Length: 107
Image 1 (cartoon, helix red, strand yellow):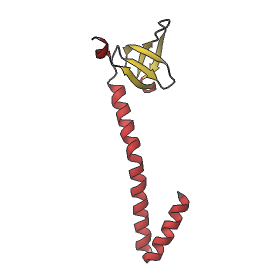
Image 2: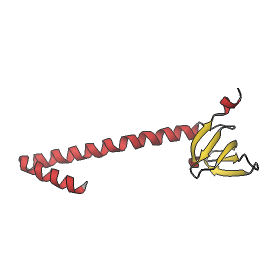
Image 3: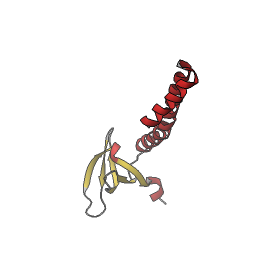
Image 4: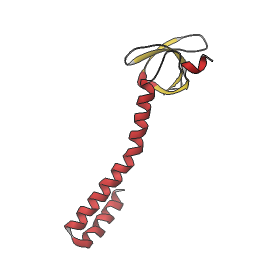
């Protein structure tokens, strides 16, 4: 990317000196800003999912542990694994996805 930026700025400098260089910088800043938007959108969706966690949700952690939430505190939650009903305390940020919502299991 740095090499293409150098080529772009050289071409822009030939267009009119400082004005071309300013235009090149604006275009590069726009490209960087647009490239970061999908990541911010994904981070926001993850934060909303973690905020909406409820007791009874079946979740998968970042490390691949699957369990059901049995209690929730501000930054942590306790999950129970299915096999031997082992309880593990994890950070909310370790939750990768919710596999089954608690209200879906009531049906």
